[in-house]
View (cartoon, rainbow, N blue to C red):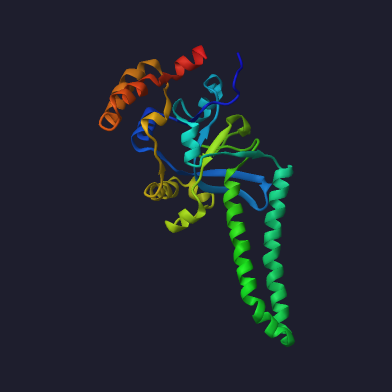
Length: 284
């Protein structure tokens, strides 16, 4: 029998049953997260930006993942994920081909603006070229806007890049040992810069806004007012609780949450998708 190295489901793990119930009731909120790009992207180390993360790991391989991210989870279909523009991320490492290309692009964009300003000043100093300067000024400004747009898109693109291995911030500090993020097979949603700007929010913040719990909470509350990932009962492929004895109560909770909106058949099918981590670790 052929074994898949990826799942047909995107799993979002969380730390407790209340968090899982909140997801089932309200959808998945987008949260600001701290990412460490040290030695990866030029002049970028710790960046805080909004995302919702999933893993593409078969249940038979989730033991180590649950030790880091929690023992409760919702599993949603990949077709739902793709419809919501959730993307598999790109893993890389310092001085790789991908990071070299990205750093060269960023450097060329920065150099363009530096050279552009210097050359325009030279033209303005030379009176004989003053007419030529004004003639091409509008075209120059338009080109600068296009380069700025490219820089904006590229800055959003790096939100889908993660170190192959690196530091992981958890509970107020970095873990002592590096994490091999590549093993997580992460898929990620992150809202566009244009959307965030339209809601008067930044696309990224300094690390202090994540490290300080009050600042982080304020950012997440504001973001929650504007965006979340919603799903229907038939998008749900798995609901994972930690222990077998939690399943009966969870069935009652599912009826409370979906009983008035889901059909009887959908509700029954949703109940069959409940499984405990105990069962997974013992039998898969």
